[in-house]
Image 1 (cartoon, protein in one colour):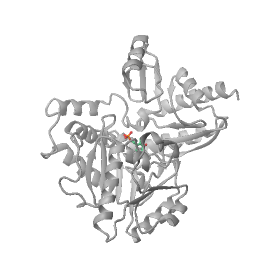
Image 2 (cartoon, protein in one colour):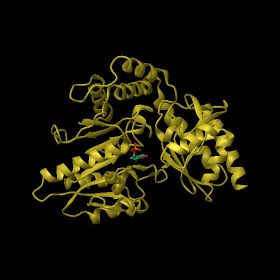
Image 3 (cartoon, helix red, strand yellow):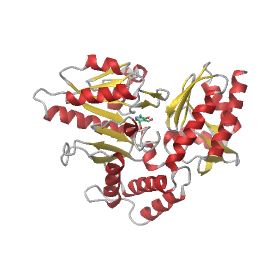
Length: 393
Ligand code: PLP
């Protein structure tokens, strides 16, 4: 990024991110170009957002068509692409659900917690309101979703007081013991994304889902990162063969256009006035999401996700200095044998590949779902070279 832009950013934008001052000016599928026309294989996709790549023509055309007709109308009126998208989400998930649309993942989770609280208030004589989440989880940056996030470092006194009723367990097995009379929901990511791409075991999740159902405790699955085919199935919940009471989506749904969703089997939980959003389910965002889904179907991206995912799992595990590779579909985490994740990210960028480091020795990769096998192969070469240079192995 030129110095003037960098200064402008530093001067006028609040400093919530440790910025990397590269100025991307163009994107084609899984490749980004900077202002000096250097190309980068984008294995972050805006952190699992640009599911069908940069500059996807099908999505861009649909957005243009929608935006040049009706950009926004209030939720006081029916919104055609919103209704169509809600129908698609029901069909694709295979669940008997209705959907509320938000603008982000945190907002979707906030709404999911509101649903759980209302369920706990109206269904039982003694109000149930407690939500159990998992350590190392990440559920968002609003005050409530910060508190729902199972990372003590995020519960800084700066933002206190936080809402009551959240507790955290380090394993699924521990969740059972901490359930009490006031527990209304368990909220979980099936693959913890920010926590370093850590998948839970299918069987233990299925057992938990069954147990919670018997106890009339809600299972909320946060699929903000794993949803919309990131793991190779429409939902990670489909992969785990469970039927949660609430599933939240965001990142990949709009392919880069901000949108979130709360899908719930509690179809009549909310009445007009209980919840809302000016922009949620806006015509442009929902038209974009419909186009993302149709791209994934029409461009036959799905079989490809498993193929490229398998290739990456196998090849990356062979690189010296990589001690573990895990994940599902194209959400992949690597553990390194030394805390060099930051240096490696920088080195990869110098060599023309973008990765993300959610921990000192953890790397997350989440390329566009339509990344080509050729790009995956090129990525492995760059990553391997960067590892060599960073760890001198
Ligand atoms: N939940 C999960 C699992 C996430 O990965 C994220 C973002 O990284 C969020 C919630 C928050 O989403 P947003 O940043 O769109 O508010």
